[in-house]
Length: 131
Image (cartoon, rainbow, N blue to C red; front, top):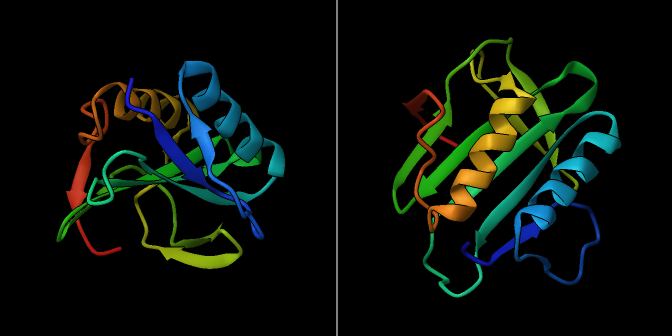
């Protein structure tokens, strides 16, 4: 598994390190417990130029979204839902309609991202878009 870093709460001053599947689940569980639409940013600690995965979780609604950034390419999950807003590290992140997927899909995709060295997860329908 690639060692990932996660940033996901306002005022965070140290990296949340994800060294194994239990750490990935811990971050996702934390996001669910927030009780509203929030996002985390994940990337490979060893490579400052690595891809970035933005992970949105809305626990009460049982859905979330994914945004994979690789250089100039920005891919966003394709699903359902109206336009909305997630809170990312204390800032609002507006998203377009049709990008939310079930939480089980989000969880599986984050685990795949961690195992796959930052590659865009394959178990998600993606559309090329703007972040």
